[in-house]
Image (tube, rainbow over all chains, first blue to last red; front, side, top):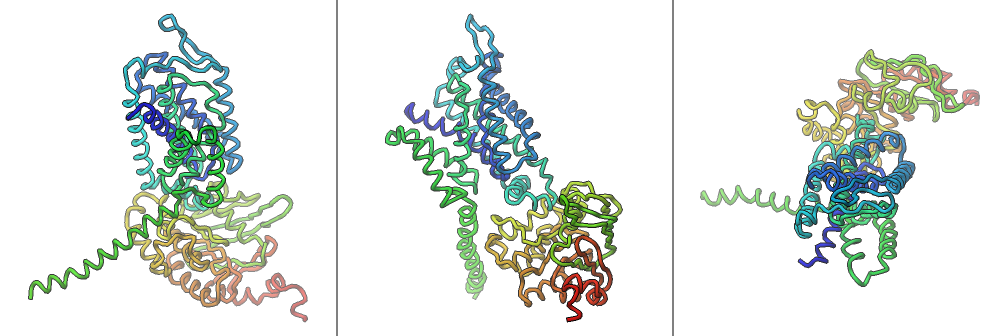
Length: 318
Length: 241
């Protein structure tokens, strides 16, 4: 695999965490324009503990995710009473606050005669753990996809569990869910915290691959993208957001013919899809169709065989 | 079982409920009627915790529930349906019923919950539709789905908000039969309905609200012929004309 392909695949993998984070909230019926804040918090927190405090990469990623989850918990309380558009604006404001805080956040220490650490709008440079420990880009890509697979497995488990059903109930009709005994507050906070955790993993992976971040990376456009990934790819399955990322980064950003036109094509794609397929390519209807319509012919065949079996057995006895 | 004392509710300057006393004891079907805007649905919304009362108290099985959150109230054994059916449109019929059981206590959820769903689908005539997306059901079936879904929680008190709204006479008759045979046994049902034949057939007790105040309560034959009730529904000079 050449370096360019590895780089593109790594990017798809890392931004998939952000897309899944936004998707988890979409599942519960909330639109967040602020998941990039948790991506940023995850990046900074994990960078600080590995580059400045000398922790390992695994701990660094875990720490990034946990700090992002804690920040999500702090966001969840004041925004709990907000719904729909107001929640969306609240998350947007929060994300901008976080970005502007990183613009002035300076915390540097001297390591080997060199200043390391976040330095305001110059960003956080010198996160060289991956470089210093001779982890190749290919190995790092495997790490990204390993963690992504674990998160996806988590999504599939949740999807089959009571928790997933409750998230979907809230997503479809919050009031009805409450009337069926769902503690709305609890589950909304839980979803927000889980979403923060997932975005935090992505951010932690991002800073270590790039060795630096600047606050301006985590602007509103990143949040809009992370939301759009689910809306393009589809909200019927957790693979939907991944499809969205693959379309944007894999196709539009990485193929030469789209150079310079990425945002135009992407924006157009979002607009068209919101009209013709408001819940994305892999929406609930597609998943339903796959689940039931495809199963029926199989079930029919199975029944026919079952019906046929006893008479065949009878024939054999004659 | 359910006891409402001096219940009032204001929306701004509008008094939706005015000092209402009402109670339901023991199993059976109870009618709650009144012209549009008389406060019937508001009463349901207060009992289920969607609104807080402006004054007065609601107790269920001896516990004051007037200031409790909806999820805690319904956990005590109250279920409801809605005037405009509310369904999980992107779930199948069966998933809609499953959804109602997710917050039940663990032992109830595990002990025969699936069989109960199948039995309810059979009883409400939705067995053939079990794998259909709920949004594809016509209105009468959506109402039956709501009823089955409320029953999947095995509530002690069931609140039905116009269960036969928008239905033809045949469908209404079928709904009345379902309420009588499937919903009512073993629990108390309060039914809001404008179809008086159905109320007269189902209920032993009927309560009438008008402009938020209770104006009559008693056996259907008495209540439905009460001049005060007739006036509320038809107007003052109707008898003379």
